[in-house]
Length: 413
Image (cartoon, rainbow, N blue to C red; front, top):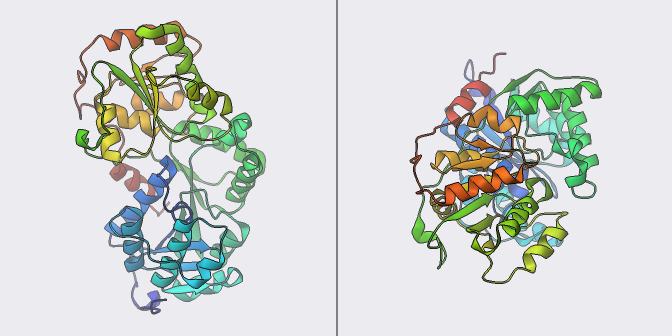
């Protein structure tokens, strides 16, 4: 463990408040492809490191809590983004055999980078010692939202800011993995109890979440800040052999989970028959989707519908930008980063008619209810016959991270 460093009470008189970012989710997902929520947590980390305000990170490991200073956060980000490798698993992590190897290596590194560590019961004391004048705690990954953590932060004069991405687990429990609905509900109840402020990614999410919070007894103050994107520069040379294909093709981007409604697209392609253009399902297989997976596994190798996973960000950007259209028949969204990114790449977007997508895509998408499969087929056939890139990259800007953080970091509310 690194040294204690300079105590904040000797360095931050009349300066911007200390920001403490919870990075537990990023640690637990070490070695895995980043999801939309992961990307948001990393966007906060990059912004906090960019700004001059004092920033720290808190991480919950198998053995307790670890505090990282700016240097530790920089090293953590370098490892998450692949500029540096995670170190070897230490003896303590080797004892946690149930954890994936990448997580054990990550936990070992954060212990080596830490300016302070504490067992679970000692978290309030750690925070009070390092942040005697208070601090702003940000949890944007839906991880580590426990009574012990939130109560410890309150006891140490911290203000709690939580980003709620959606309430889909409560609205659509049929789409969720076993046990996750109760866990999510418990987290949201703690947000209702402890949060000083809730950040929402859309007005639609705020309306839905506050209805739920009202039923839980308390609606914390809230604000809406649309998410930004971190588009990778398209690099066709990073695509696997055979991609992109000759001729028209379509893409959809996202984990293969039930609410993304990939089965609807398979039905459309079945209806269009052998003359249908290529369709690439870009994303890893998720949960509760055995029927879809069985259909995909039964497709012949030369079928126009193909699964693609593990692409680099640059390769995925290239594939999306070259598509005749990006298709998103999702039944529910909290925000919808893939449709936004597709529009920013200049790709035509066809999506289900969801209020949240209209909120930030405006006229830059064609909205078609999934109850109207004929409309979907007609649009797909029309786009397949038109040149790619008629919108042009950069013709749609959309929300960005600068505006998001101007809203969120206006802390005197």
